[in-house]
Length: 100
Image (cartoon, rainbow, N blue to C red; front, side, top):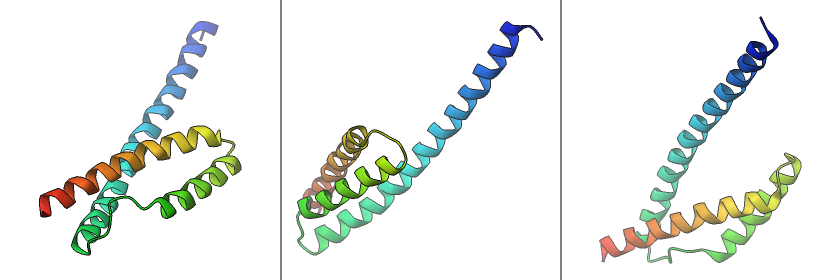
């Protein structure tokens, strides 16, 4: 095996690992959104607001601590969570509107 083909094999192996992780992330996000949909239904049934700023603050602090312990940039982790929470709130608002 030449150096170039050995490097290519290593690159292919690394990319396959990335692809597997991406697939796992998509499945985890889908599962998370199933749970948050149930939360949205519960909130709509019980007249609770779509957003919960106190819970979000706790979750941000928790996620930042997890990110630090995992050697992941906490700012990035927070941006990622904020993106997800924004989408969850949008879903909760849609559920509330559908129920009138």
